[in-house]
Amino acid sequence: MIVDAHVHLMNDATGWYAYKKSSGGSDAAAWSAEATVRLLDDSGIDQCFLFTLGGLYGFNDWRAANDEVWRAAEAYPERMIPFCTAYPNQDPKEAQVEVRRCLDRGFRGVKFHPWLQSFPANSAYLYPVLELCAERRTPVIFHTGTPPYSQPFQVMEQARRFPDVPFIIGHFGKIMSLDAIRSAEICPNVYLETSGAQVCDLQMAVERIGYDRILYGTDLPIGGAPSAHWNVVKIKSAVPDPVALQAILGGNAVRLMAARL
Image (cartoon, rainbow, N blue to C red; front, side):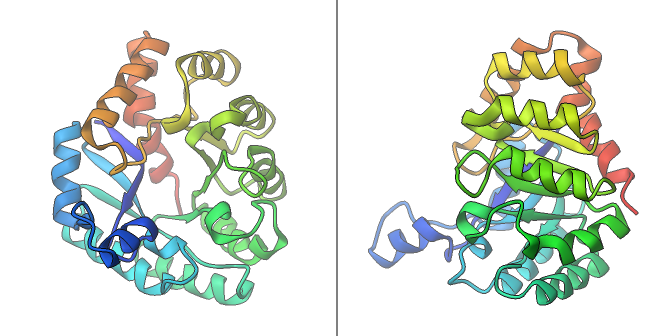
């Protein structure tokens, strides 16, 4: 079982894609749910955590984007595990209301992209949503690696404040991978997602925190199937032990989802 912990549903309202479409670009095709499943097949991925991308841009309707993710997951329930988003910096309480609506509907987690959504990951605007996530043991994944708003230590602050919430540091912190690993060392409720990691980062993480809080991720559809295959090769290069490898490629994600209330 291979579970990708970082896949976006890219519609035609998604930032760069929307611009290219409006300007007549030939490669501006959106990724439908059906096309995304075909990409998962081509990439050898059994299931994925599915997020919006268009809904992370403040000029789009993020509530409607959550509904779009839900429809995709409803159409392919064996392949897609839906995560919602919200804009806590617009109205923290309304963000909590939206996340509650989504969780009650069947969403399994929450995605924030502080860099695009224009708030620091350690912002107090997030507290109402994170209080709800603590009640339900709901995983929260943050885009990280693009300062000043999306830094692993900012996520770590929230993890220390809300120890019952599983926090996922997306992209392994990218250029701040050492901060990501240190965050997971300090906080047992912090997980690392591999799409931004190098082989040496993965080796260090396994040495420092073990393998049971590392989640395979790709950031698809960016890069396509070749990127997904490369991410598997990267992990295999860093983690030769077959038990650890299977845990990272899927077992840890399955266990994390099973622990959610």
